[in-house]
Amino acid sequence: MLVLTRKCDESIRIGNNIIVKVLESSSGHVKLGIEAPRKIPVHREEIYQRIQEENKASLVPEDFTPDILKNILKKG
Image 1 (tube, rainbow, N blue to C red):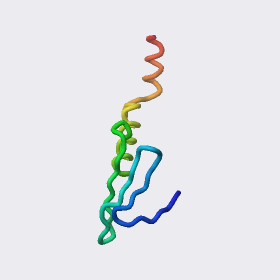
Image 2 (cartoon, helix red, strand yellow):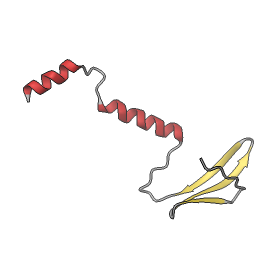
Image 3 (cartoon, rainbow, N blue to C red):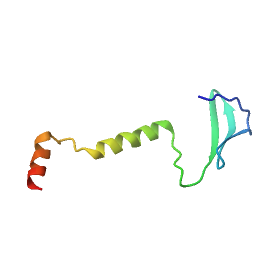
Image 4 (cartoon, rainbow, N blue to C red):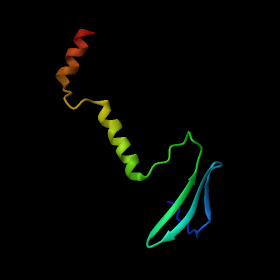
C-alpha cells in the first residue's frame, strides 16, 4: 500500500485519467473529490462489498441442491 500525505486542495493522480483531490479535512474526517471516466466505477468500500455480495447471491439460488442439478442434466 502506498501511503501519501496531502493537504487541502492537493491531489493524487492515478494513471492518466483519475484524480483524487483533498477538498476538506476537519474533526477526523476527510472530504475527497474523485475525477474518473464514467466507465470506471467509483464506490465507497461498504457499497462495493454489498454489490459483490448481491452478485454472488444472484449466481446460485438459495434453494439450490445437487439433486436439482441432477434433474436438470437428466432432462437435457
